[in-house]
Every structure is written in structure tokens, then in C-alpha cells.
Length: 124
Image 1: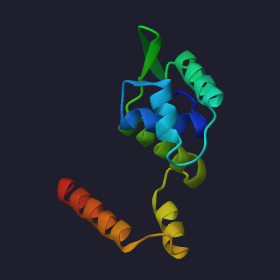
Image 2: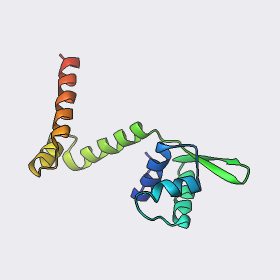
Image 3: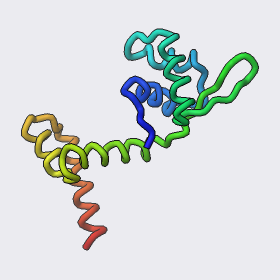
Image 4: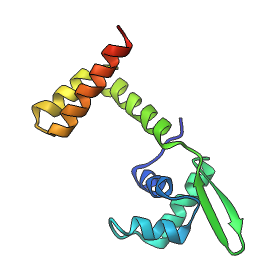
């Protein structure tokens, strides 16, 4: 699995939202949340091209970037890795920890109930 830093993930999020995108487009999208320096974003883009996390296509004087990683697949693998590393592969302790610290909203709980109900339906 490709190792992606937190900053690289933020760039990927911007790309997943709208691609292909130029470096300027990505910088503009990232700057909606917090200030990013152009040089930093371009360094991250180059790093991710080398990692084969994104690709680029040259169009005239611009490079257009696209993700090579699918968001759903990447986040699933990262989530699974986190659960395996910290919780021995068990999801219940993770959810219980959030429930105990009141980090679960009513919407979160409703969504979890739907997931469990669907799992029970599919696995009976």
C-alpha cells in the first residue's frame, strides 16, 4: 500500500472532489480551508506523482493532475489497517471508545444501526 502523509491526503481530497485539475485549481480548493503555499502544494504533487498516487497530463503550459487511487478503496484499506494495528482487528472497541467519550452523534448511531441491520439481513 502506498504511504500517504496527512498533507498528501488533503491534496488527494481536493483532487477526488474535482479532477483533472491544475496545480492552481488544487491550491484554490485547499485554500478554502486554510492557507497553503504554492510551492508546498507543488512539492506534494511531485512527491505523489513519484509514489504513483496521482498522474499528470501536460496540456499546453499546464499540468492536469488526476488521482490514481480510488477514494473508497484507499480509505477502506487505511481504516482496516488502523483497526488491525490499534484494536487487534476488532471494530467494537473503536466504536465503544467513541461512544464512551460522546463523540458519536445521533446520526452516527442511526447509521451504525442501519449497517448492522443490513449485515444481519445479508448474513442470516
